[in-house]
Figure 1 (cartoon, rainbow, N blue to C red):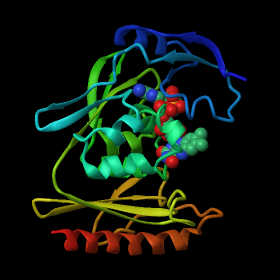
Figure 2 (cartoon, protein in one colour; figure 1 turned 45 degrees about the vertical axis):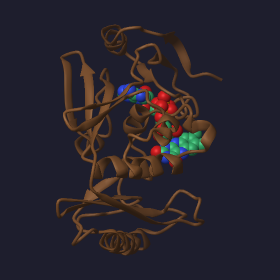
Figure 3 (spheres, protein in one colour; figure 1 turned 90 degrees about the horizontal axis):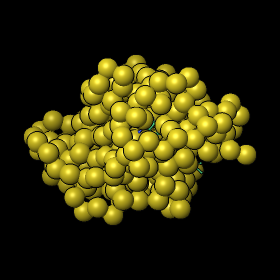
Length: 246
Ligand SMILES: Cc1cc2nc3c(=O)[nH]c(=O)nc-3n(C[C@H](O)[C@H](O)[C@H](O)COP(=O)(O)OP(=O)(O)OC[C@H]3O[C@@H](n4cnc5c(N)ncnc54)[C@H](O)[C@@H]3O)c2cc1C
């Protein structure tokens, strides 16, 4: 049964932000999580599909993705850095990738999302509009805050391109969601690494000491200790792959 007690389809960002200020109203993007959620709490759904947030454009040396760009669109767009296109291909089943959006992926902050790890190493900035107007913040901060505040709408995600990237992961099977993955990127001699599966959201870590400060929660796929062990292993492999590529 649908969770929606109310449904709106605004055509302007201002209208959407006004609707989101109403108690219990949330953005509806692809709906792959919102409509599949076990949470029975009814919500007012503010459908974002008429807001024209599906553009992909280059600006100021970065690529700007509208929040409603789908993972399928990302996978197929040759302007998008390879690491992101590959990451898009590994998220969700292909049927859901045609619905799931980049804004929804950021807001959901799934700890296992290799897409979020790829965005982190590509220096992603999240554009948000709220009651006080537009603002932007690094993706790492948005994830640390567990998504945008209530009443705020993600409108874009911009990223840097260039550099060399590598991703290494360990999962129960090669096609399963990784238990732990490391995505590394090197630009002008500077290396960044992002891990999945070791924190409440994907995180940037120091390449020389990737497990510093991590306190993962174990589950049926791997204990906390095993995840820390994997974090070191996959980071080492990703850094070696970068060396091999340069
Ligand atoms: C079978 C299945 C497999 C999945 N596999 C994966 C996976 O491999 N990796 C992964 O990361 N996730 C996975 N998910 C979770 C989820 O589908 C994804 O995170 C998806 O990318 C969410 O995007 P969406 O556009 O469908 O968001 P929605 O379901 O529409 O929304 C998700 C949340 O984000 C909020 N939101 C959406 N858009 C915005 C916006 N523009 N601004 C502010 N808030 C917003 C919504 O209010 C809601 O709280 C899976 C889910 C299912 C059902």
